[in-house]
Length: 279
Length: 279
Image (cartoon, rainbow over all chains, first blue to last red; front, side, top):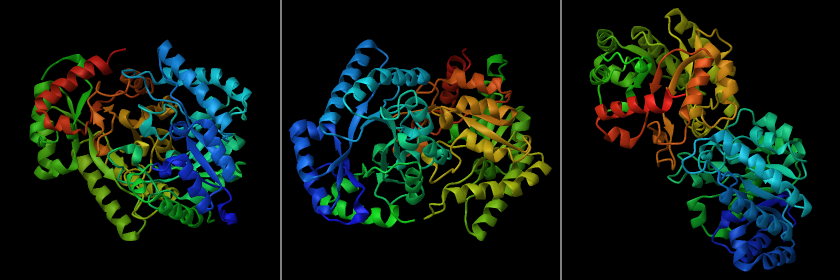
């Protein structure tokens, strides 16, 4: 592994190289001198949690996050029970993987519902059940506010301030928040909310915001430098708030996925140094 | 014209029936019993401002808004001068049309720029030049915060609170704000900001938020009832804040545009009564 000190906090979110298995992504990180990885539950399940845990441990990588739990907005009892059960499994997996946090994408409106306030309340209610379970297993939950364009179908938490309003009902070591540049860069209040978040920041994820947005708006996440985000001020704000954890590059993008993953890691490492670490 | 009192505040934004000329849209409103119209500059220019003004006056329609001025974020002197000149023309047109307001879509980041704070400052600077010009002609400017997904390429004002921060540097009768359900429905702070806006609300525009968003995200504006927005609470909040003006239906949507405009007006009128006016 490279000892390049500039990469000491860089992490590869596994979805950025989604054609790679866990083993391939771990090897790729080692080759590229990237010391941490953000895992996803689905590729982990393909080999089983113990095998995945062994791979990252043997490679000396940190697990900066496990993606993801959440989807807590079901309005019916069966849907709610199923979501809680699945999140408990995700918490168990995060514990076994020694992930720094379990990222929660909270879910959108149930089909046919227009009750946004109700959906938001159900997220808070579900967290009250999950936070003690997670705490008992040493897992930190990380609420991820998503860009408002996903409010209807993916996450009814749309701003960092709103995520903090929910998280602050719990101890900071139990429920933190994710600051993801793609989701928050537009927010005029983001500077104040990052400062407010302080050490409640459990994860810092980066990628760029592209225009025009692609037909599938989930894939508008681009390589740093290909879009509109000015990264250094956000990185500095997160650090000033007290976050010293990994900086995880998470890109969902058809072109990136079509590129050889080793090339993606080379580009991502160079752009990280040139466009994120600069002052 | 119908005397249906439930339609007393309904307005057709002309883009909803974009295949219609001004004359056709005016006639359509009269046939449908819709007492107000939101005009766009381009179709107005096709017949000239005096002819358009005559058409709406002769039909007894109110002009609830003129769309649109703005695009005030150019960083170079020439771009800035051109934008100010175009906005002065738009103000003159709004005065001649006796429009209740001139809607301003403020513009996104200039090409290649990542300086969001700078772009926002230039909006405020340009307004300081335009507001007195508009006031002298009896025209009210209406800052429209756009959904955050348009922050990079269309409007660096993304929330109602942020638009109010800018507007409040001016008298309320000079610079108001637009509350557009599509742009603000997701905002957890919208209720507080609508109350704060009070009589600074210069326009209330409605349409639904569709998922999945279409390939061109500008066309995700749907007919009321086809998406995720709960309209009555927003209408009531705007009324409680002191707004008693028109409720303008503005839909950009390929299917709506492919439907015969008379049918669009029939659907829009029925949905307005059933889904917006209900308590």
